[in-house]
Amino acid sequence: MFKKWFGKQQPKEETITAPLDGTIMRLEDVPDPVFAQNMMGDGEIIQLFPTKHAIGLRSEAGVELLIHVGIDTVSMNGEGFTAYVRAGDRVKRGDRLLSVDLPLVREKAKSAVTPIIITNGDALESLEREAEASAKKGETVLFHVNMK
View 1 (tube, rainbow, N blue to C red):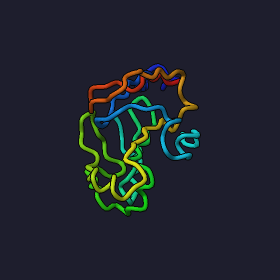
View 2 (tube, rainbow, N blue to C red; view 1 turned 180 degrees about the vertical axis):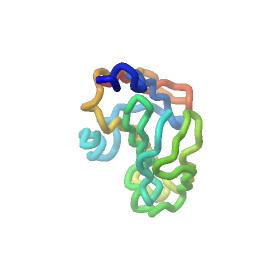
View 3 (tube, helix red, strand yellow; view 1 turned 30 degrees about the vertical axis):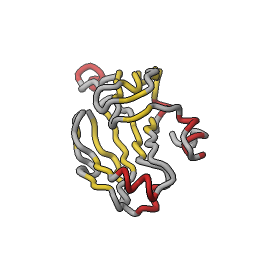
View 4 (cartoon, rainbow, N blue to C red; view 1 turned 120 degrees about the vertical axis):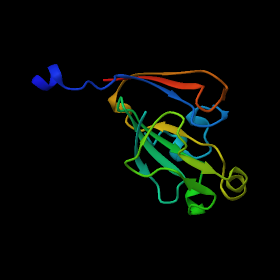
């Protein structure tokens, strides 16, 4: 009870901005059924895949995001990817997380499309998607999220 009165309150609203430059597309249009059929669902790195092709983050408000660079990039076994963070690291908007050799991804993977997925959608009160056609890293708002 006292924790509710005196405990640190988590922020309930979050604005998610683009982590990279590119064209915004609907998830249903991603050329991979795992993403297209919605089989997936300032913060902390909660997971960095050993192959460095995907990274999981949790914002201070509790929004969990998966940034999955390319389609079928897991088969590249980390080739062309450099990670600048580890699980447990605290990061701020604008911090460098990964670098990617895009020409190599385009050559070796099915696609360079990079899905950005909210993986804990059941914890959201609401989600408002912005309707821009292109994204600029750190500037373009992708989503406005309110947590339950």
